[in-house]
Length: 136
Image (cartoon, helix red, strand yellow):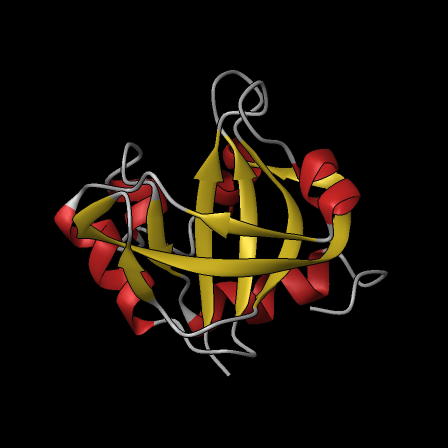
C-alpha cells in the first residue's frame, strides 16, 4: 500500500463533503507532476486529504477506490475515485509538518502549489505517532 496527498479548497470540496458522499471522483488536476501521482495510485492506497486556501492542514484520510482512468471530460487528464475513511482530528497543520524538520524534500514542503503527490514513508510513520487515534 502506498500513500499520497491530495489538496482541495474546502469551499469547493471538503473532507466533510467526502464524508457525506462516501465516495467521489477526484478530477480537475492538470499539473503533469500531480497527474503522474494520480496515475500511480491503485485501489487500496491511502490518500491524505489536505485543505488549502487558508487552513493549510491535513484534515482526513481516503482510500483509492478505482484504477486511474482517463477523464471523459478532458482526455489529457486522469481521474481516480476516492472513498472516505476518516477525519484527522485535530487536523495536521502545514506549519507543524514544516516545524518537524523531517521532510525537507517532500513536495508538500518544497512545492506547496502541487495539488497531488506521493507521501514519503517517513511522513506516514511520523503522522501515525502524532495522530494515534486515527488508523493510518
